[in-house]
Length: 80
Ligand SMILES: [Zn+2]
Image 1 (cartoon, rainbow, N blue to C red):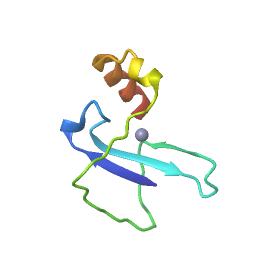
Image 2: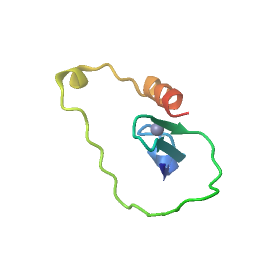
Image 3: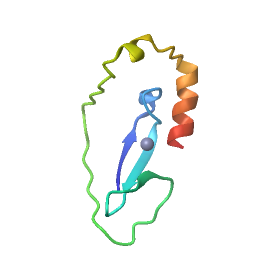
Image 4: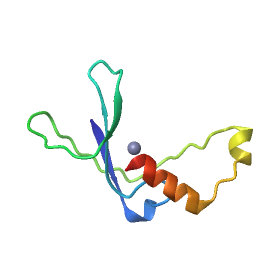
């Protein structure tokens, strides 16, 4: 499982707050984690001070009709 916490000013890029994803041991399944209790395992924390975002390099992306309000709703549905 891996997660991150995005500050509120990152709204629109992703969902602010804590956000976790998991990957099964056989690496065939994964997805969002909505809640968990860590009963065993290893916890590591790292603070990142930079953020790189690579945009799709395609004509379709360049021409996409992306409205901020639609994107916020789509991100919220996907990441919630
Ligand atoms: Zn996610």
